[in-house]
Length: 481
View 1: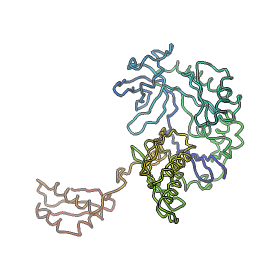
View 2: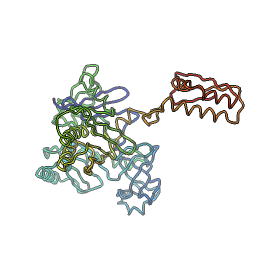
View 3: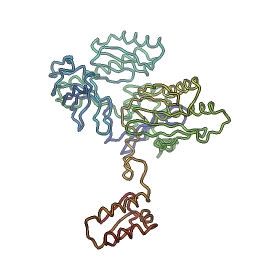
View 4: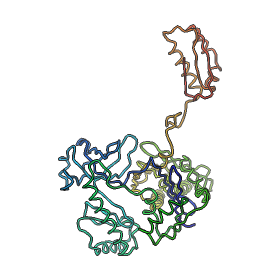
């Protein structure tokens, strides 16, 4: 099946799925209240300098201060009129203005991660206005193509004061296409310079594209047969964008006139499974994905795998199938940070090397940066993957009010024992004729299985205990009154 980009627009959110062979490869959600700030450029004020951790906190006009490593600071100014290269980090001081770009969302109590390495992304190029280096994406592996692109960029005779990075999608493009992209980015930077001069810090200087335009810019290429959107206003907005930047692909944009784009394309069932911890494979083996705050743990299990192979070959076959799915799931779920994968143990070194190659191939289309450290003798793979945006899971789920993130709740028996302890603590040093103990029905059932414990408490404290069953109470809820 051809590769397609599906865009579903609702009043409360926009969803984008990049689909290949009927399976979603990438999936994103954007809501107005959770709009990403990654890529935004701010004129900030250094709020505090902490040499002990080699960082500074920067006020960019948001509730949480941005975090900026001193080693990354290359450009700041005492005043906007005379921008000068920044002095060594030790001379940075509170109140100094600095031009920064958000490179990573804030997570939990942490503020957004900032950098002074400003980059303005176009279709084929990234403009580096404060740098004069020229680079080519590492994902373009053909040496001849890399040389061709570098040569073309040099022939454009662009300003020597700025730098450019050639993006992966520029592979095979003409000099004219690169020139058009470069001129657009230079004009954009010229406009931003005027805004920098006019606005007072802290203030927003440049806002990155929204989700739809980012996906079109970064993922809508010749290998995509269709971009389908189910909103007429969004369709016309996309068409205007396409005419300006990508007119040669404008004919591939279609307006979907049905009621349920994701459902009719059979994608809804796949997106609903994104958060399942268990993923079952065709061989009846399965993997378990458990994200935590600090890392992601992935476990591979043979499950119902029943092919007649020796233990080593069976483990290798299951592991290879799992590695392909793990690569897909990491991209689809946009999981990041430290990732530990527990594959089934294999004795042969050749099998372990081949398994790593399978995993790397599965991640070859990943736009995020990743680093695989290798595979241990026990089948453990440690890797890191760049986490830039809030994941779909972060946007779609909240902490469970019942288990508070534990994933489990205490049993009725455990709560019954604890409730009687709480009752005794409550009655200590009190003289009451009666007391009410309100619990969930299942907990009361456990207490009544051995009424002797309750009678002993009544006799000891000379009181009457009224057990009140409340079906609306959570299992762990205890109320003594």
